[in-house]
Length: 119
Length: 107
Image 1 (cartoon, each protein chain N blue to C red):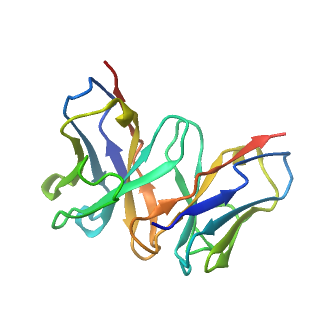
Image 2: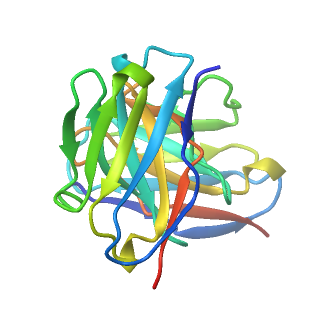
């Protein structure tokens, strides 16, 4: 089965660091860009950026550049989203999704990772 | 950044109704327009890519049209499982941008 499986929910304090993961299976992971998408509580979807697991090339949305970091470990078909200093405003659901180039669409999505940042 | 404006932001409809949702881009995006369905507590699901191509497994009551800057998602006969939030996404120019979503509720 083609799928993306994300790490579990996290509860953190402001200023703490965090890394969440997204692992692919059932497809050639390094052949697809992986996107990160944020959804704040009760709000719409926001594209954060993407990473190419084959060489860790990245594109960041200007809204997120400098606040988050994408990384990849192709040996275990995984990509990561990392914060060095969380803010309360980072509280959100985070999704990874596969970019299918032939469709130019996000065709496979992870189940989401809920991040709660609260003192 | 390209702004994607959806309308309406919400609508109430009955089973069997024809529903139309529009998405307008702030600039030309060719046919790089996708539609997604999201149900509460679930990840988004790809419905349509390239303006009008149905993703595998998506019922034929869903259709998409448009080009350039104006796009439409139509549900020809609303079914109980279609009550959800729908949003568009442009993949023409990075940063890719989503519409704000349209919530389809039961009348």
